[in-house]
Amino acid sequence: AQTVTQSQPEMSVQEAETVTLSCTYDTSESNYYLFWYKQPPSRQMILVIRQEAYKQQNATENRFSVNFQKAAKSFSLKISDSQLGDTAMYFCAFMGWGAQKLVFGQGTRLTINP
Amino acid sequence: DTEVTQTPKHLVMGMTNKKSLKCEQHMGHRAMYWYKQKAKKPPELMFVYSYEKLSINESVPSRFSPECPNSSLLNLHLHALQPEDSALYLCASRFQAGAADTQYFGPGTRLTVL
View 1 (tube, each protein chain N blue to C red):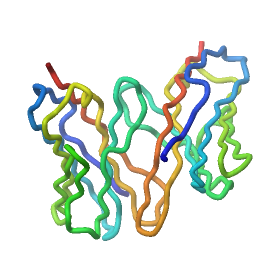
View 2: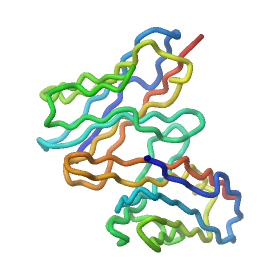
View 3: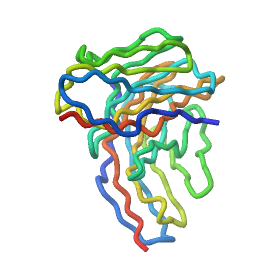
View 4: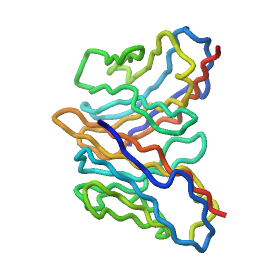
């Protein structure tokens, strides 16, 4: 069974700083998807970024980028120029190719301070 | 457009009540999901409907009864719930096109069982 581990339960940075959230996963599959979801206090789960495992290029979405290391089974999220609105719980998630289920990590609570 | 809507936003019910949660998407997605989320925890999968048929039931108690009347609508019928069922209930729909495969979440229903 796949597992996802987020080793940082909480993080706190100052506005405009860069922050990196860690995620490691365990799988025997070669094709799969990885996701970062953001859940602000308003509680809506919002997709931040997606990575297909067959793609070597790291995904980017504006200030959000990932460092995908397939051999190391690592999928970290970098937030550049952090903003107050980035304050949220961040979940890393794995889904096997053709699977129906998302496997979530336990989450990292990120606080951006003014 | 990746909008999933859920009603109601909040629901308070007694243990003898019968109520229903509703989820809608008009994106043509053919798979829809119910998740339960406790505070500071990742979502837990409850049910998956694929092409309007129940494809995954994660051994959820029978007091939760899902229904998928059509490809755009997913209901969760609640009856004789327990206080420990109080949680955020999230609906998601799944976008699949070529190599892209992503779940998009609704804003959730905050359920309190008294």
